[in-house]
Image (cartoon, rainbow, N blue to C red; front, side):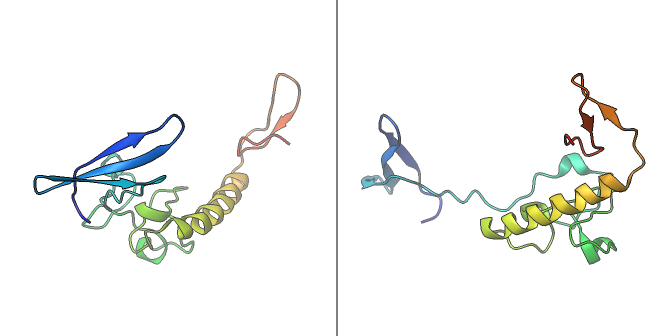
Length: 133
């Protein structure tokens, strides 16, 4: 169903049902979970001038951004994954793989920078990526 007004029925600890309102009628459905697809309009206006986007606002990455890495953007050191990426599959399962790959790529990119090493108050060495060593 698309664009159907609904009202949640909350129990003490979880959702117990929903009431659908269509054409002047109401229908109650028992449910413990609800998935809502809110659309695929990217919220990337804040990137204006930082990273290139397509006509719809999705961030250009990889070959579309003339970059060797699939998740690299036109912004130096910038990466984008999942729903923000132009041409990506907009599904949660793909996000897991894309996210883990981009974290590894970003970590390598940060590690390659010549940043000063810093120690915590306890004397532990911080790596440039911010991770304790």
